Length: 119
Image (cartoon, rainbow, N blue to C red; front, side, top):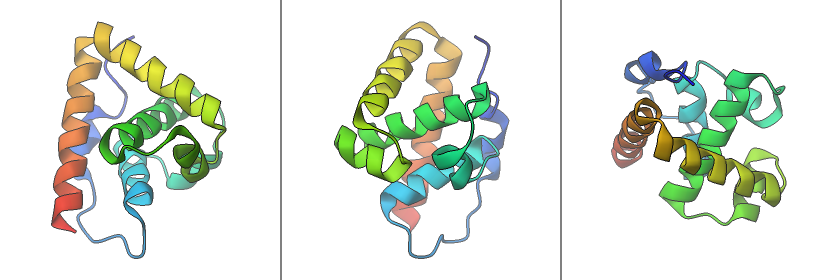
């Protein structure tokens, strides 16, 4: 697969604080923004490739950054824990074989960490 659709949008993440959101909601929102989607798209959207990728990435980031359990991520993302497990495995596998995707994820993690630290 080619480079992720959203990579050019990392530099345009909003800087205004997002009121009353937990770190999990904030992270999911930032992943959504990086894909030019809404949080509702991630949680309730259809299964188009762009939304599926963004949803899987959000679940992987939540697991990696917050060390949430699969059921906890499932509650945040409105998904079953087994779906979250599949998503995290799929992203890890893709990350291992696609250098451009791995670089995108590294940039995304850095941008999210900077945003959380500034809150």
